[in-house]
Image (cartoon, rainbow, N blue to C red; front, top):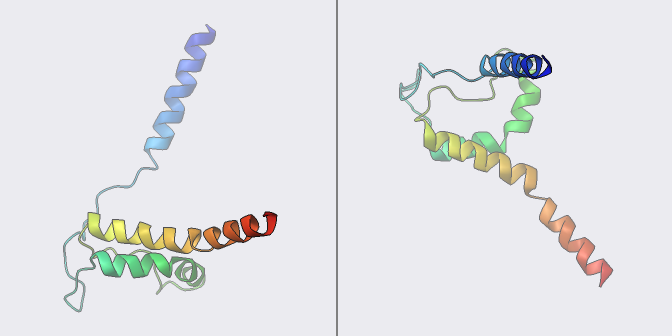
Length: 103
């Protein structure tokens, strides 16, 4: 009985998590009002400025975190690379400062 309960609970958790998965982007490879489709470089920039953009998006409906008029994988890669550059950029300096003080 306990195995069936655990299996049912696991099945419910998987169903709930699958409901949170992102769907397809209907604006993929479609130009915006200015005729532009965001690629790698714009994705990189959007990733770098994402923390500021997120804070602004909390207070304004005209600011969004992610460009929906993008070319897909390359934009996503640039966005994640930009986020990684922001979030891990100062960590290396702090780690090397700790190493130099301990020597």
